[in-house]
Image (cartoon, rainbow, N blue to C red; front, side, top):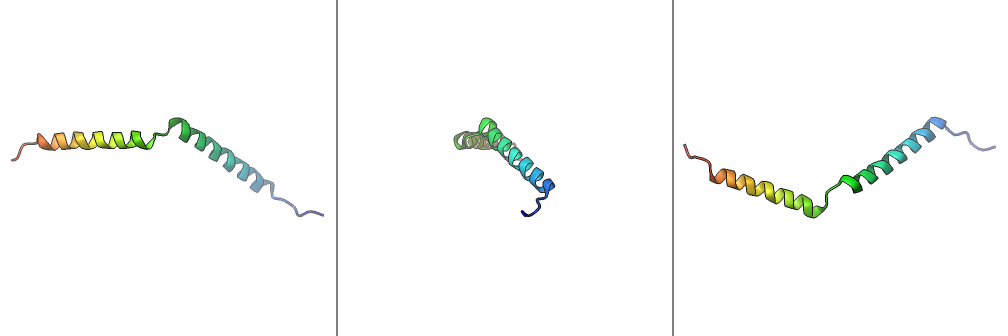
Length: 58
């Protein structure tokens, strides 16, 4: 006779696997490449430097 299985654990594991697959799919579809992230970071730093350069000293 085989050992009994807990159906709740099986169902939860199946749900976890499907959520993980969907998350991986979304990461590929909507994620940003490293180059895009670096470009955004560089642009934000440039804007911050520009803003700091135009501040008045009081």
